[in-house]
Image 1 (cartoon, helix red, strand yellow):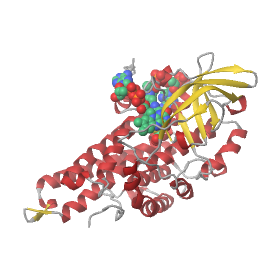
Image 2 (cartoon, protein in one colour):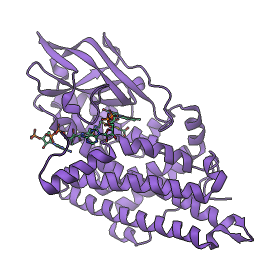
Image 3 (spheres, helix red, strand yellow):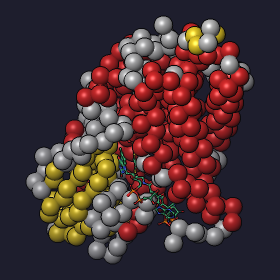
Image 4 (cartoon, helix red, strand yellow):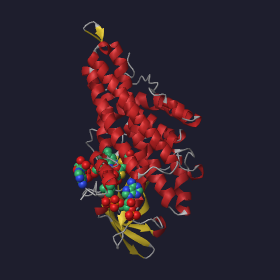
Length: 397
Ligand code: TGC
Ligand code: FAD
């Protein structure tokens, strides 16, 4: 039996450079708790949910219980009160289970709770954050539009003032959790062309969230649109002071940081599966692991995983000191997601034909990682962010 034949999960982690010695007790405890939860709640069901293209919504409650929503936000506002490295290791363990499960936590914690915490009025924080932290309310984050993905500054969703309210019109596209969300953090332009953020509640007149079907990637995560047809948004639901693209982009920094850690989890699961399989599968009277070409693949995988772990750890220490820049976060997100996708492809080869089945997690991770490479800023957009940072020249336009 190899690492994870459907529903059986024998994963124990890999730490080639003894990086655990750099972690504190609270990080190790948090990681172990999430690892156990993934084995018990995610691994036994995830292949089936992914196969059916259905979101395991029952996991929201468990995610809240293990502290996966806003681990580094203050406890008085529904967060976990831990540091950025704890947040990172939690995302890593979740994505070891499935990128879609990590997405459930990323969106809730970093794209819904974080903006309300950072930009919301005290009333908005008190009203929403505790219930988001316990999973009693589920949120989504609407930035991307049908015609404005990589370039959100061009968005056409708009609000106009009308007495005590704003009237919102527009459409958001590719929104994780939107069809099941109770609230949506939405970004739209005011009459002066400034981007503003607001909190919408499900059921408001003119507000709908149809599901997007037909995804071959992130199939255990639900994705939809947000459609606004003359939606009346009370002024008390608008973030009072934040204006401009830096509002939503700062939420993306928080989520991209989590993905930089999360992607390592998917890579570790693929590596772990391939390593075990290669020791057990016999061809030409030898285990696959005895062939030099297999060893090359495995040795390169653990090298790349170790480099990614070092990048994430250093980024985490910078984030704890408040020094991690958006460009540093872009570098780690881009490198680590691409690393994971390359490893998934190599691991799939080691399993031969078995690698394409859902008896093993590899193909699911590989398909998921195609989304992770694209959302939260595409692979190329993050390269251009690094390019701009080191040259001072904007090559986007
Ligand atoms: P630009 O002029 O560069 O910046 C506008 C203002 O924002 C500031 N800023 C940031 N602030 C915080 N964090 C960041 N990462 C920031 N990046 C920029 C910047 O300093 C400036 O501030 P100020 O005070 O001067 O106004 O803006 P631009 O229009 O040129 O755009 C730059 C670009 C292309 C890098 C940006 O638009 C971008 O990152 N595009 C990618 C879009 C993206 O990532 N979308 C993600 C949508 S959400 C999602 O995918 C969720 S998936 C969730 C899941 O399921 O897990
Ligand atoms: P485009 O912007 O059209 O890009 C297409 C290609 O062109 C890419 O390869 C890109 O790198 C390249 N390109 C674009 N501009 C340039 C340039 N200047 N120079 C060089 N190359 C360029 N968004 C949300 O707001 N909230 C969510 O919850 C959310 N969840 C998502 C869930 C899923 C499953 C997916 C697939 C997407 C999600 N997104 C979400 C949207 C995601 O952030 C966008 O897909 C992403 O930002 C890219 O936008 P796009 O798909 O419109 O691609």
